[in-house]
Length: 171
Ligand code: COA
Image (cartoon, rainbow, N blue to C red; front, side, top):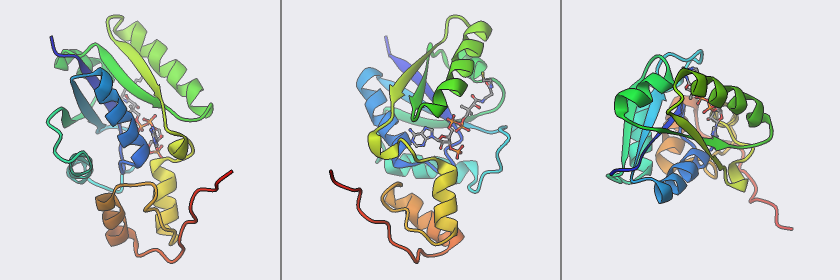
């Protein structure tokens, strides 16, 4: 039996933090469907096709990863795909409140579907897609936080960086 998980999100754009969750998720699952949410309240910078291409490129054509789009409830999408697990990344404590609501509500809607959390890497614990876009928009270098194609796409869309990011501090 194939162990399948759904990893939902907006991924506008995908960051190294998302990729870390995806790669570690593949230790536990045979296949992961990255599910791009279509009808969220966000106004994405990148189209679904662009977001999909950036994820596939970063995963180097790994056949265990599929990228698809969904609209409506995530549990309904998981049911359609025959998946029992929704994979989520937990960053800071601030994520807990939302994830708590998300997983309990989803459980009420579809008790057979479970939400599984992985703790994000330390380096991405404070990163979000909006933060990346904001830093890039105002001329900061985001190359430490996103894959190369995303860096290039952000530069095309928002302009070249003027300010380099210092290496992570060492103790
Ligand atoms: N590394 C770096 N950043 C991360 C991250 C990680 N590992 N995990 C999450 N983030 C960032 C995301 O980039 C996102 O940044 P942004 O808000 O600046 O765009 C932020 O953390 C929040 O991520 P997430 O909680 O995954 O939100 P999302 O908008 O990407 O996805 C859905 C939310 C789509 C999964 C959720 O709204 C959904 O399932 N909607 C469908 C409708 C539904 O079923 N609703 C009922 C749910 S109970």
